[in-house]
Length: 183
Image (cartoon, rainbow, N blue to C red):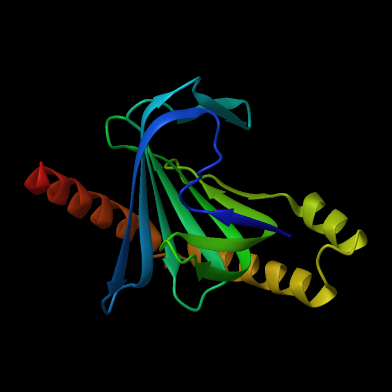
């Protein structure tokens, strides 16, 4: 199981970035929200889904992560340089935490759900979860937690109840307004 940090301090592709972490405690969301804005990078990051190639990271892109308190997932919304959603990437995780430097982290359970603005939904890395289970990197209980969480998320997405689609847009808007006030 790999621990992943929201500040992506070891991401060599990135030359210059800005990073911010906010704690939110409202009726609609309780947890941490991070903002990772890419200012300069060595080369863009591309990913292909069903023959369609998407740019996930480039100059001016914003990666916003929601770490909902008490949940076994983290939602990364990737926005392009025009503020449009490129994709929602949902990592299934065992636990979440916070470093002494106030950097959120999560212990990744391999399964991921990707949702594109077109409505296409993908469940990724089932093979990686099975391999980790075979190799003893995760227990049967942890693998079951990953599958159950992914199933619950997929059901929520298909039934139109996955609130992070609208929440990510709302939080990006409030961040942009806040950045403008502070500049």
